[in-house]
Image (cartoon, rainbow over all chains, first blue to last red; front, side, top):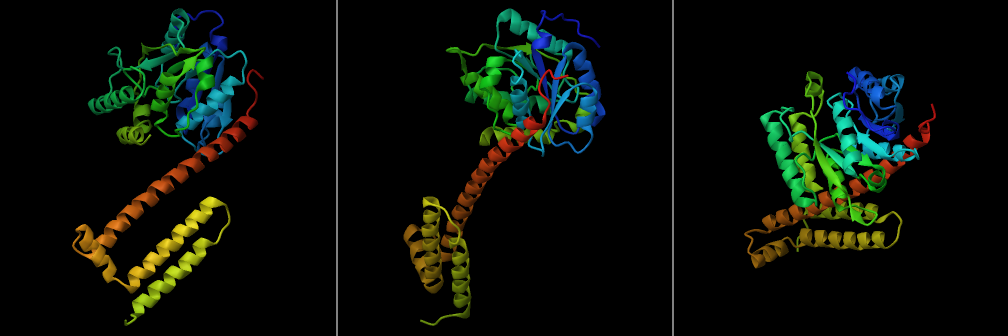
Length: 237
Length: 114
């Protein structure tokens, strides 16, 4: 599948896909290879995988940064941010999941939006259209999580726990993710909500995205139990 | 006052544990911890030798028995220990993460190298 939404010239080369990677050997090569057809710069932060995820990602053309031990997805994102900041030509970071649940078309649409509307952050949201069909329990918990996030941060979002985000360089420079585990998503939202760039508040928007709950993602990804952990992490933040 | 065997055993135990905890080096934090430890040990020994004190305190604050009073105090102490331990672990995690990240980035190839 190639992207159908054309990107403004130069944007793809100034974009780094940051992919937290933990034991995704069966799918990571395909995810990286597909992404690299549109985006030449992909960094996978291998978070102490016990399978050969790192080797497969590297073979598929990604830069691999390896944590010496498992630290959590939030830590992997922050490492990826710091890596991408080393590239002086980087203008955008896209946070992208390793399990293939995100669509490159959505990434292109989000980058388009950032360019045309002059946005610092574009959050992906599952709940702006009807393409994504989470189970009722998942939907309820995610709604609860976003209600809590909206209540405690200076943001208004419809989906706070979406792994797909477009971040402009000045935002990436200012982010400090310290929650190593699942609560990093709301921590990121909170920091964006409180952030100023050149003396003004960060401009952000949400873009509808389609999350593919494949059998693979369902079998190993965020189980329903993880939703409980998200809620607890939120309160204990 | 008749000294019971259990009282001797408990007092000796507390003295040994206190002595172990008092070792170690550092500054004011360590000093404060030591003072707290000594106070705690003194209190523990006092309550072993004069168990009726707890009952009197319990009556004073409206709790039925001295043992209940000790239990409540223990619950509070346990909770505060849990919180302190959690915070200390969190702090350690932050340091450990910074160290691991520095290592990971140092080993990585620079961007646009290929």
